[in-house]
Image (cartoon, rainbow, N blue to C red; front, side, top):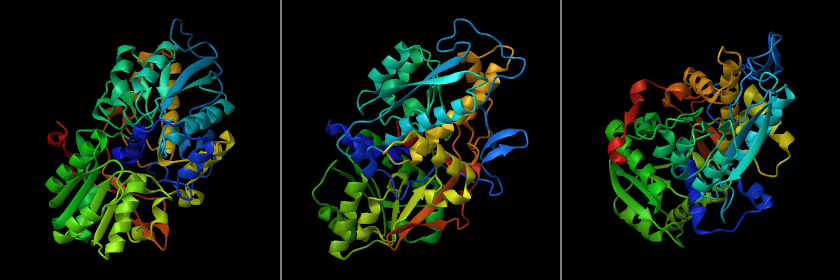
Length: 457
């Protein structure tokens, strides 16, 4: 549920002050947040494979030019004989922490990693960065269009609907780290390593919860902050879980973006006999809800929280104890057993940022690998490295896990995967709950990706 992790950043739109690096560094991540979804091969070790450098299980797509060289191209924006100009757009402004803060830094890490290996067939990557400032994605996209980029790589913007049409109008391909809105996720020029097709929803997590707590899901509550992205995500989940997981949401509430107390909501849920609670909001706001629950001496059987809550801030609230935290990323605590994730962290460390790596940041790194894989194939094709050939090569990639950074997806067809991982807060820490095996995700069948278009019309 990528939109869940994007909501916090959107909440900052009401305040315009820029966070310092120190503030961002202290705000983001548990002991380190999760990487994107991955079921890596434990026997794979970072470094060189039999045929050259590896990134996890993926033959590194970056390197020097082949012995015979590559086809020269003329008149392609952002491409010269020895360079490729790319850009990344992310949100970097706001008075509360922004989950997209490590997106730019992760793309910088990828560029440095790739260039250290020789670039893409010898062409070094040149990176331009843009700040969407939460509400100015269209302006950032316009600037990127005017800067003669070959492509955007790793971009992640909360209100990405504001820039989707701008990129289409200037024919700028967006190999995004993630998409948050329908306009971006369904854009004809957007490809992402972990697709989030807005008109469909992965209901596998809800079905698992329903199996564990069949009675609780019949008395379910869903709260969401009063902003469009949060409301749409709430509606998608309610539609999908009701249709395919047997949930009965007997309490739904739109809350203020910032509230002093949630005691009223707690009293209402308690009176209705609610046994399952989920919320789409900032971690700070959900912590207030959990605190008010604890103060009132009331607790539902299930507290089910989305990906954004894999965050050390949640652990500061005693009321979070026992809460489920769904993530489509592997926890950083498992990095020593996940080669690709360790390589990502090593590359990120070289950037020297004070901002901690995040789940969305790892997806942006995976987007870099995805771009490089397709760009290498395009570069070595009869056509050469052009935007059209790059797009063609991207559409051919229907099995992708970033070398073990996340579970296998189909970027080329923009299809979601019925996979999930649940952590649980135990003794003030995030602990793997299901599936139990380190480095794995639970993956189901295609019918667990259901149509929720009725909820977002």
